[in-house]
Amino acid sequence: MTEEELKDWISKTNRGDKESFRVLYKQTICHVYKTISFLIHNKQDVYDVVSEVYTEVFKSLPKYNFDKPFRTWLNGLIVRQTSNWNRKIWSRSRLYDRSQLLELVEHAPDSEQIHLQKEHNNELVSRIHKLSYKHSVVIVLRYYQDCSFEEISKILKIPVGTVRSRHHIALEKLRSQGNYIMDDDIKAPSTNHFNRKPLKLEFKRVAEQLERPVDLDIQIEHQFTSFYFKGFEFEIASSPSPIMSQYQRDRFEDVRTNVRNQLSMGESAFVYISDLDNELFVFPTLGLTRVNNSLFYLDMNEWRELISIDYSGIKLPSTMPDGFTFIRAETESKGAVTYENQIKYYTLLKERALKTNGGISWQKSVPEDDSFLNVTPHLIYSNYHMDQIEVCYMLLMDGAIRTIPGTNPEKINVAGLKCNVYYLSSNEKKCISWIEQINGKIYAYDVFTRSPNVTKNDLLFVVAKMK
Image (cartoon, rainbow, N blue to C red; front, side, top):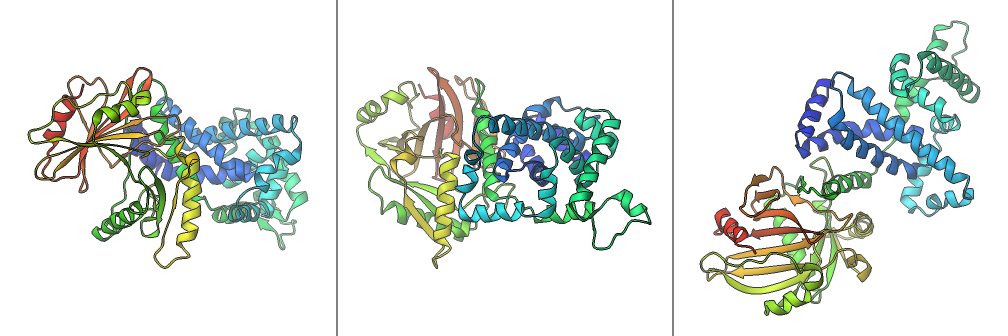
């Protein structure tokens, strides 16, 4: 993607197009991840630094100067975050024993440990990490990013002469430690080039071997969607949803129904389906889902009393469209999953599923998994034709993932609601969603239907009559 195309996506992001930020992520993540991998010693820390870089990218995009090269601006953010992280590590090492610092690596999962060890054992990476940070960053920018001395000077905010001095010192150290050829070596006819590696080509070769773990993308997506629920202004962030064939949809529902039938009332489970684990969009959609077996209440007053502590201020439908009456109320844990639990169950169940012919694995969630979520109440209304309208509430908690399952939601106005309201329509359902702050708590509302006979105006009628 050209510089001008990237700037066009930046403009769209700054105008509120959240999908444009995902495009920027897809176009820049390899650049960011691999550069940081060369500059950070502990590969476990690379995840955190990448996350911090994208937090800064998102916050700083409105201030971006379009007259300046995007690459220089992005490299400046990378250098600033890696420098800050290295200072944190240095300070921490003065307070703790080195064995404590390495404890995270020693307890990493086996597959991840092998991956990290493989990268750590690379000769070039080891040589770069032995340099001081001020020297290694010049080498990485010069030979991996192919930056000029003048560009490095702008990124590091130091004189060009200082850049050249650090470059010279770093080269001398690399020459003494490894079999590398620099540009100036190639121009010198007296230099023995036998069995020596051109540094730029070696950087390129090593960079191609640095594989970005898929769970890093999940972490950034979680960070991105959660960003909208900080502070006092809230929007609903939409996320790309997988395009499934009819066979995949039927299989998905069959598996969910089968698992649900094996759960007791109030229980929930994590389910992995290998057929649905794909990367059709910027972020992996993953074959992981939650299945819940709700608790039913035929008495709405009993339901309201049970949820009164957390949901005392929520709005309830006062009038329904003609023919619709109250059928039942439900409570379940739904929709909000911590990043840690998502990764834990995804890794565990995927490994199990790959060992089975059906490619399916599931496991009940334990109380510790549900303690973060809180109960999600539902109200279900139906008519004589068995069409249904559901009203779902969710108390948003810090760190929970909350997205609309679709793209390009329609922003609509509803009298009486002083917040952003979105309408989405798909083959599976129609839904009106919004987020509202009540008595210091943040609630997400979904009024939806899976019945083709229920119209958008029917849902709008329900929303307008909520009190």
